[in-house]
Length: 84
Image 1: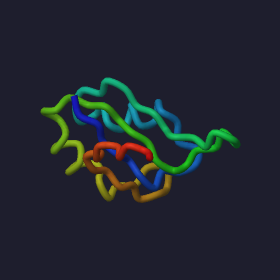
Image 2 (image 1 turned 60 degrees about the horizontal axis):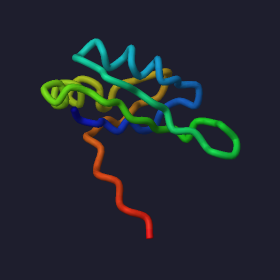
Image 3 (image 1 turned 120 degrees about the vertical axis):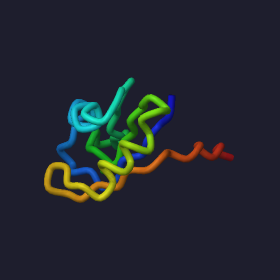
């Protein structure tokens, strides 16, 4: 399983919207839009967990495309740096 980073999302984007967009290109295990802890508002990015075999196809198909009126960025997520 691999995780894709999706950036520049419209504020109204929901996890279901990501699931729907990405599932056209392969198997999606989960999707989430990151929200601000205090306001509950979207922070404009999210993550989609997908089958390893579909990563390159999804990035090629969706990076630089329009979702909800904005051009999104899609790439393989980098490992999270430990907080100190």
